[in-house]
Length: 171
Figure 1: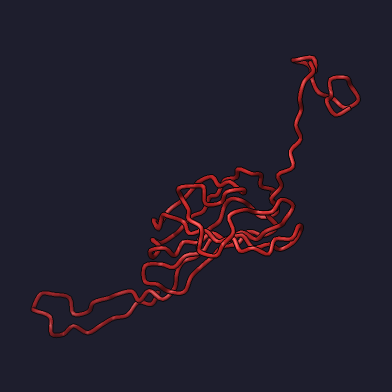
Figure 2: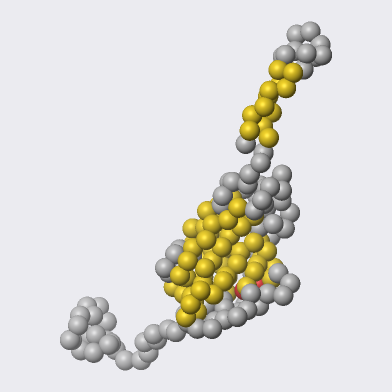
């Protein structure tokens, strides 16, 4: 932002001689908190980000771009419903990205992430002055739908699970 003084010498007596205004020329950078860089997300995962300024209508976008792992040639861009400044939190489903009321799928985008793929996750927006978009990106976010499921058996309830014991379900 640039502060500028403007001569208003034609102002009526008793008013300030100078008027200061701020010329807004940049969108302040948002912060993407979760998913964090180098993390693993499952089918249901949390999104948290902060916008320092109110966004222009429809400009808040969340995108997932494949950077490694399993192949995923599809685009995954979501338009976030809220333009308010402040912290935003919601849950997404990797198998139905636009299943949340907080987002809509951008035209031409795919609705499903690929298990085993690594993504860069980016939040971006434009401020109300519609300056150039600002963004924050977290890299190496891996989506995995592989789960370890423990079923059946009595593992001596209340006893510790220690390596090399019969209480350890992985022995």
